[in-house]
Every structure is written in C-alpha cells, then in structure tokens.
Length: 312
Image (cartoon, rainbow, N blue to C red; front, side):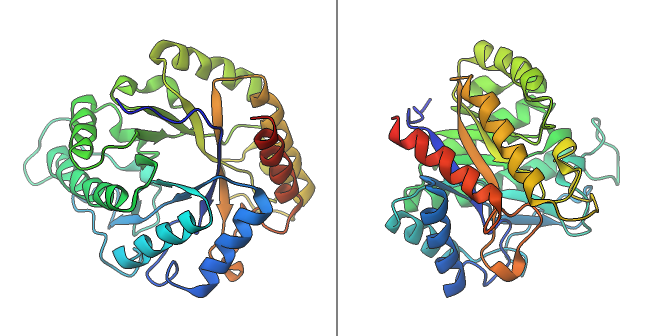
C-alpha cells in the first residue's frame, strides 16, 4: 500500500469530462491559473472520459470526440504542476445515451447473447491502466480508479483484480470514488490506499452522514476525502445537491451556504482529509450550475482553503 500525504487535500475538479480540444486550449490554461489563484487549491482533479454507448454496453472507448487526447492531458498535467498543484487523475466512465454511470450493470450469471460482466471489466481494466500509465509517466500524486460505479461495486473479485492491475503500472497511492451513501456498501476498501466519496449531502444532514462514514473510516483505517463535493446555484439544491436535473431560479447565496455547512461539519472530523470541489470549468462559456467561479461560493472555498493552509 502506498502512503497518502498528510497535507490537507484542497482540490478542485477542473474542466470535468473534457471533450477533445478543451484541455489543449489557451482558455483552459488561463482558467486553471485563475482557479489556483482564486481558490488557494493545492490539488487539481482531472477526469478523462471513457465512453460506452449504453449502461449495458461491454466496450469502453476513449479515442473519440468526447475524450481528451493523451497529449492534451499530459500537457495539462505538466501545466498544473508548473502552477504548484498536485494532480489526482480520475478516469471516469460515462454513457453516450446520457444514462448515469451508476446504472451500468449486467446479469450476475452469464446468459447467451447478453452482455457480460467479464467482457466489461476487461475493457474497464484496459481503460484504467491506460490512464494509470499516464499518471505514472507524468508524476500524478493520486490515481482514482473510477467514480460512482454503484451497480458494479458488488463485484468484489473483479474490483480487486482491477486495482491490482493498476498497481502494475502506477506506483503512487490508489483510491476509488464511490457515490454518496455508498461508503458503507463497499467490501474491498482494504485494497485501496485512499477512500473517496461524492459528498452531495443535504445541507441539514451532514452530521448524520459523517457519523455513518466515520464507522467505515475506523474499520478500514484509510485516509478519506470527498473527491467530489458540490451544490448547484439553483434554489432548493442545498436539500438535494445530487440532483443535477433540478430546475428553478438561481440562488448563489444558497450554494454558498451549502459550502459553509459542509466545511463547518467536516472541520470537527479530523479524519476528513479534504475535498474535490465540483466544479471549475475549462471555459467560462461552459459554466455549469455547479460551477463556483465568480460566485459567492468561490470566496467561501478560498477562505476555507487559505485558513487551513495557514494552520498547517
């Protein structure tokens, strides 16, 4: 097992799921520079996409228009490091038809003429190892073997094999990002160096959820981070921050209040080693409701990150 640093993880998910050409633009470099300066982040999380047609497809591709090129990714990693940022690489599978990756699933017994787990995991291992090799070559400080693959996580043997395969090409710390409420459903946390989760919890429920997650952290004795954490600037999002389909009027104050509540609750738990804010765009023209740039939430994050940095 690789040791994960003791320094607080003050991260931001940058230009999430970048299509070809996004990371290679001067606009993306300028945006990352602003992100580092304005948030006082010390980590950036990059999320290259692998695409499968539907949740039931066996093949994951990462050479199309919806995936960044290796050259773009490597150049951006080097640029991030020139800014003094540590880099976490989190290759993430998405579905072309728009279905959420947590729905990817197959029959647990092989059925003739139906897609099979074995074929899918073979493709997923190839996808993860490809980016693990890039992480090794470019000196990324953390590798997260995917994100929110909820309906695959019961395949313990397959996941242990995937993590072992990643370790054959990457010698840094390895983790996995489960979905919210999934922390206590995974039985193979002992195989990773870092437990990561998507922290999209209701503004008034942080204490309950942290109590639950704390039991997992105690059991496995692993560093823990929220490698995703965010809330939209849409009225009502603070109560359902995981619902990216929520419609309504903009409410920047509610988004900022949600971040204040998260930081306040987590400050009392020394086992929470940090956050990966979701998100900061590679271009201001592609700014999502979750984006924190130029909104009051940005100042809340900057204050938290700079305060913790001074207290180190």
